[in-house]
Amino acid sequence: MEFFEPARKLYSAFGFKICEPFGSYAEDPNSVFMTRYISDERA
Image (cartoon, rainbow, N blue to C red; front, top):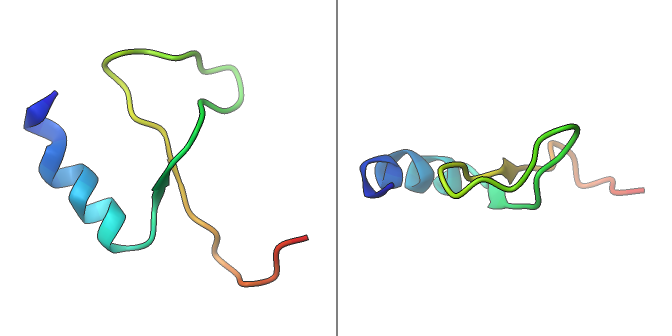
């Protein structure tokens, strides 16, 4: 929803990137999944 665009922009400003659903979550047109690495050490 456009209503949540400011929240998505805020998360993006702090390094979060859109990703695929994780865990037991499924694709949903009302959801955006985001993730962020907290360290530069990526194994």
